[in-house]
Image (cartoon, rainbow, N blue to C red; front, side):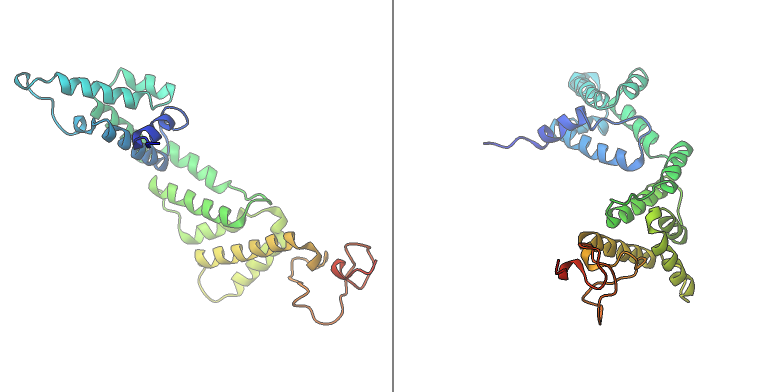
Length: 249
């Protein structure tokens, strides 16, 4: 079966879930624009954004017709409110796209405030993979930077720790003590490594609860690292002195 063109693959998304909202964040606009360029190139309409309209002797009607097609493609790839807002204001595809580019990529105090609130309030949930949370925080800081707000690495490190789940309280306290006792300057990479290490340990502990005590307060107590007799209660029968994996009952 013959495969469709790239435009055939991208176009349906731009008409539905891929619509652009007025004032979208810079990253969302760049993704939308990249997909739009595929469609315009596939339909051989990109020239209307760079070439002037020919004079009457060279038949300008083909150019005018293609410009209208390009405008239609752009306008119907916007959400309804954006489409209405821009429809009567621009008489060429280039003017329309330039306006959208300016609205979505020029620094905006409104977008800055929205992003900053989202960044500071981005709390990690207990069931969220720690690597995902670290990447999300990095991405949001980068989005703020694209809006003209550079977040220092030291502040990113503090926010990353502050936005960890409440259930991490004991682990966070130990991490903070470790950081305070370290002679080195606060490093975002070091904090991210510590957070990922704690998260990885918690994920492993959750997957293998029989290998850990209930009362170890976050300290690692895998049976492979313990020496001597087990001094906790069995998770199976509740008796003292053995693990569930070694339970005789």
